[in-house]
View 1 (cartoon, rainbow, N blue to C red):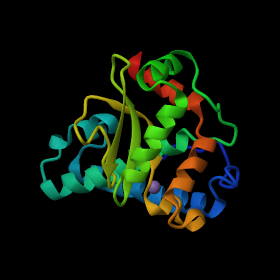
View 2 (view 1 turned 90 degrees about the horizontal axis):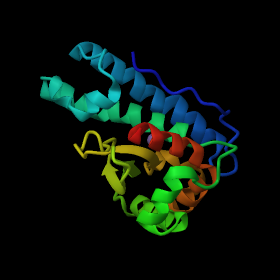
View 3 (view 1 turned 30 degrees about the vertical axis):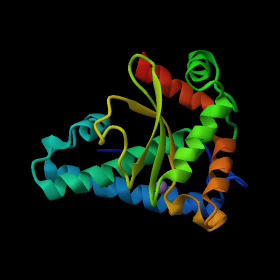
View 4 (view 1 turned 90 degrees about the vertical axis):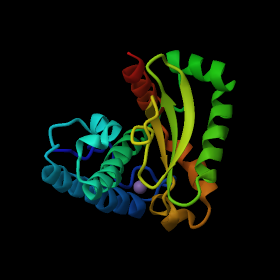
Length: 205
Ligand code: MN3
C-alpha cells in the first residue's frame, strides 16, 4: 500500500505564497487520485510490495505495456508529490547549510546561482512537468527537468531527486495564472532547506 505523505502543516499555512484552494485541490484531489490509482494498478500488476523508488527505477517488472505506462504515470504522480509536499513548510529553513551547502557552493557558486538555474529549468519545461535538484550516491549534484509525471528515476538517470518543483498548471494557476516565474519565486519562499538537506544525507549516506 503506497501512502500519501502526511502534511506537517495546514492547507492555509503556506499563504500567501501557495494559496489554500490550490493546496486543497493539489494535495486533496490530484495527489490523492494519483495515490489511489497507483494502488489499484499495483494490485493488478502484483507489485504492491516493491518500494516506489525501486519500482519507478525498474518498471520492467510490470509485463503488460499499458499497465507499465499507467504505473509510470500514476506512480510518478504519487512519488513526485510526496517529495514536493515534504520539502515545503510554513516555517522553512531559508538557506542550505552543512554538507549540502558546501556542495552547492562548489558546484553552482552559490545558493542564489543554484536557485537561478532551478528557476530556468522550471520555466523552461515546456508544458506540464517538473524541475529537479538531484544527487548521486557520491554526493554530486545536478539539475534536470521532466515532462508529465516522469522523474529522474523513471528516466533511468543514476541519481535521486532531493528537491522537486511542480510546474503543472494545477500547482499555480488559481493564484498565479500564466505567471509561472512568480510561482517559482513564491515556491522558494516556502522551500525548507532542512528537508532538502535530509534528503541529500539520505541519498549520500
Ligand atoms: Mn502537481
